[in-house]
Length: 358
Image (cartoon, rainbow, N blue to C red; front, side, top):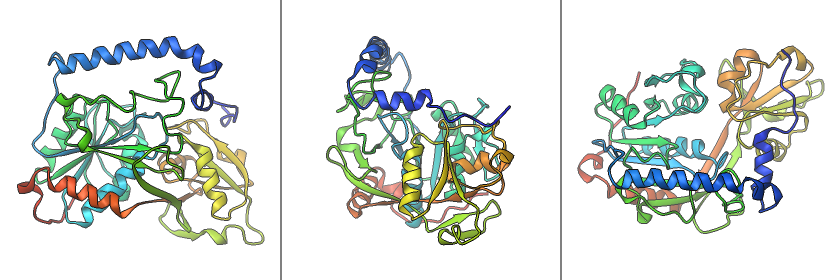
């Protein structure tokens, strides 16, 4: 089997449809009406107690989005974990582990395979060294984490704003420059739920416990700001770093950028902003498994990719270089986050500690 073709994917086609209320969006509208009916019924089941909402013994902060694909949820999770760790907080992370092939609840360590963990939980673990557990049920993942690390003070849920079976104490909703797109729900629009949303109070949702974070350069509505940029170096599979300005010295191989993320074009633009001349780009579907990727077909290029892609790509192309992403939040966001956390559980969160994991 050859390497993947670069023809437009369903994902990229939908992204174009979601920018306006055009013919494609109108054709999909009947499916959106069905989606609305099903999600409304599901919320009713939680509201009436037919479906159970579980609460655990430590505060839960959910980081997610209402817009599908690539708003910056996982980089936000990583930044928040690192911020809390810098204060001495004992923090754990739970996730569904999108794209993994296992259904069991398990701990993610640095060498866990993506088939078991998923690429995003593995990236979080490698970047933060915090305990990370994945499971189809976030509640079961949280329980497993607390059983293994009983001194955990806070749990960050990577994704799960619409996963109502786990009670949350604080939510962070991430948007990029797409805002709400055309304002319609899936699949005729990009929204997973209406915005402004209708809080499900039984699950802990409150408008005064919701922080809105914009990761793009042109926010469509009010909220806190974050800036994303690429590091000035790349990382080899053995951990060595390479300065970006050395990649285009005379005699160097031309650069080929590979991105299996929700917004590949955004990564390619950031590479250009770093002053890199990209000879070829290969946009791939989010969470692409690289099973059909053949390194020899691109032997004349130096591959560069995102950190998220390394979990899978380095198995096929260990010579690929990963360029780390840095996300910087405005100081007002950190002040408000700290204020909110201080009000969650003063007795549990009052004193600083270190967090040691294995």
